[in-house]
Image (cartoon, rainbow, N blue to C red; front, side, top):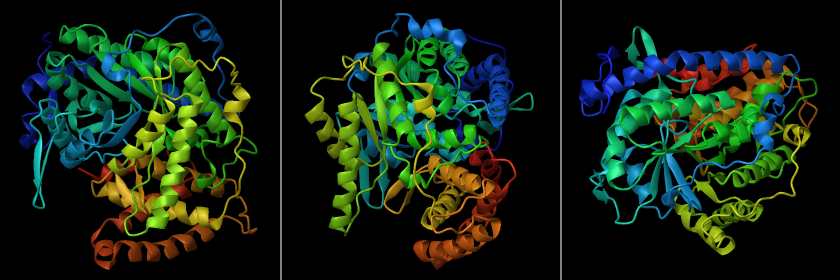
Length: 527
């Protein structure tokens, strides 16, 4: 293992995590910080510059300067055997019970999430690192409420999603700078587990979130090369799947794969974040509008075009195209409602597999068998990389086409209700919130916030003719808080963080400028 300068990383109030924050691990984080943090900050500034152009009326385009990458013949490096069959992936936060249950769920892959479904309290993050360390070594167990949890002999393959480039870690600093959340999550996981995974003939398998430009993929590739060299392990020990959850990334799929071609295994369609990004980037365009979020589905033209383009480009470059999330939770004591929900999931998964996707996501172990059945019946091979979809010619116009639909009072109420409920859960340290029979993460709150902001900014009229205004929103917020109190119970409502969540969420939808991410502001209120 390579050594570097003496660590200058300072740790705040976390002596109990000494098994994770060892001097050697902090030295590695210090090396990552000094080599890559300034470039990360520069990439974020490039996002701001790009956003200014979009706010002036420019739209995403296929970059002229990388046309040769899109049009030439090349393939990514081979995919490890363990990642060739990913027909069902389960996702969730890194708490101990979830890690055990997800690995035992029967899914092919478990994506352990330090990002959207994890409230980034330092306790959650450090315990999550310990949980994954124990899981890899097959020593993870749990005694809870009289039940014992331990791993089965046959478990899902583990993938890990670190936080996005925009998030920082305030509990770890170097030279008075916060460390990058991305580098902390990746660095600690890689440091503690790469050699153990090698002993098991496995690699460090990752998901990369929120990438907006191929330059950001290049940054990650450089991080990977540095980390592999630091431990003297082969190039390709790390294999990453990139979430395509920003509208700008859709226009640079080949370029993103190219930058990571020695380290990439696939792309994934992150639906809610993609719609959120679509609003964020194009919000100031004349006539731009998005209807109720329930009306924006994968059959909406711009969403269908995005999904199909992911399949086409992935298979052209010999990597996998993973479909989107089914957030449904089995509904107990209501067989009819449960059947309707499961039929929706089934139809969604059938559309994905028949379009050519190689796998899909679910949020609850109860959906694994349903999704597995759909893919087993329609995909007899390990994947569908042989389905090239060469007949498709997805245009810039198709990727940007406005979705049709209406804006309703029910849509406003749902965004306010779920937005406040989720944010309150996040502030309490729970990033995967079971709300109204769906497992919600930060993306739900982001799209709810963005839609409410957009509708107010554009002064839209509802399908009833009523004008959206601050007064209207204030009225709905008060009424929805009454419903929220009834939903969670009086004691829970008054002992929770609902006052703060309401204040934060309201401020964001009334702001003159749309906040980039609600988690950036809310992070100030957690430890």
